[in-house]
Image (cartoon, helix red, strand yellow):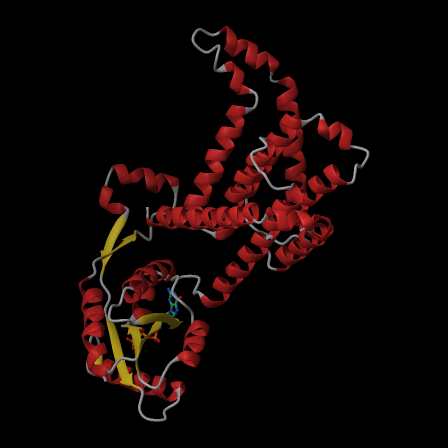
Length: 399
Ligand SMILES: Nc1nc2c(ncn2[C@@H]2O[C@H](COP(=O)(O)OP(=O)(O)OP(=O)(O)O)[C@@H](O)[C@H]2O)c(=O)[nH]1
């Protein structure tokens, strides 16, 4: 559920940002139309840059999509031999664009210059052929549906509108459940494509494609930023982000080091996968620290919270609250033995087979930055306080 809300937010922000820039371009189109010759020449370069950029960062779906845009733009602008044939294939073009986006939204990003890249190019070609075959051979199905009582009107939309609507729903659904910028970019591209094909866009295609290619670059750059600064498992900012924050901290701040108690034993008892689940859930609790605290995954089962501008007296109640919240947290995990289909079916026989409740505690060491101390020195003091907390019997805050 939470994932869908995040996905909806990502999709919403992507659409709103793109729409705002689009309307700005429409409002200033007199200026842009004067520059159209330059825009047209630059677009090919832009798209080529996106293909290279996306391939380098392994955002293969945006690389293939930009390649398709490049082919499309080349086909309608430079009159290659197939342009006359393409001009007569409006339905195929519309449906193929939509189905290619559907394919991209269902597949994973993989290396472009690899065997996976080859498979994906074959898949795109297969989709193009299937769409062509469908559009040319769907007549008997349409006639069959037309003959059915109450479905005569429905038969008119079977050929084009129905597959367009179905693939659009799946693309938007995928953007919601995947909650990543690339899948949202595919949904934005779908909107652009449908508006373009149904002539709802006021701007020339070269301008809107330039906008789209700049948007892809932005998506790849933001994605790369998150890759570098977010911890993959917990979703918290990583140690690299902590080091970045350290550069912008003022003179006064409080630091806390947090460590899950006896986590090795926990891993040994329940297995590494369950350990990962618990780390994620504990990280979520740590991430919701109040009082202006910023949480980071320091590494392994260790976390750091920074309270910029706060004294230790101000930070302590918030740290105690985190410690108590985790102690009271009955963590529901998937049962380690839930692996095969038979075992999943067995849940009907005994429901409590599937989930299990566990508890963990954490120890916290806190330190305020003393005069002229570097960030590393303050962190060391918090680490020493953490040892104190461990020696005091764990599940407490020491400073
Ligand atoms: N599942 C999982 N375990 C991890 C991860 N990172 C570190 N660990 C485990 O965390 C455990 C840390 O163990 P120790 O440093 O010995 O400390 P501890 O068992 O928590 O004991 P105390 O800190 O003294 O309470 C090791 O078993 C690591 O394998 C991770 O990403 N996932």
